[in-house]
Length: 217
Image (cartoon, rainbow, N blue to C red):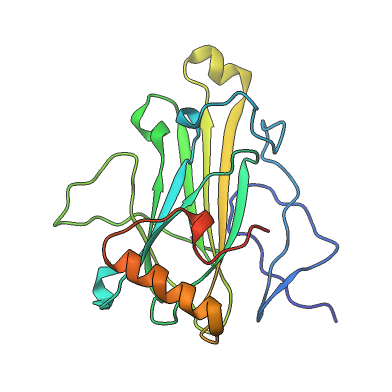
């Protein structure tokens, strides 16, 4: 019997996979199809970072955890691909997080849709009564399962502004997938690096995802 598969939380069409990659105790079906209207998975070579649909995603420890050393780190968009995938290792205590995507298109008149899922379950942005809602930076909350690799997906679709753009059917698309584990058996030099980064973040620092606990896949 083949291993069980977890369908992508994306609302966009997904292709059937012949091989299933395994991540700890979870199995994920890889996606090969692009959304309708998207012609390439590669970012235009001349595209400015100011025009990215999803330039950055911030993941932070939820304030309700009241942790002595809360984490905040950023996952930047890929400069070459429209779909960026990263893996991140967090302490098991960081099992309740806030997911804050930066969505500049929300500040324009272009039609767009934003999808955020955690382990295949679609999230809804939350309202924080004590804070003024910042347009283009919605806040989502997600609980992570311990002992497995969790998957956070953030996806944006945006149409072209104006009537002619709507008739063309062309859309822009970007996506970030973060595989988040809670490995506690980090030893030696790796453990020292983790402690240094945690201390830096706890003091209010923010690091690029290229500097913290992740490997591109």
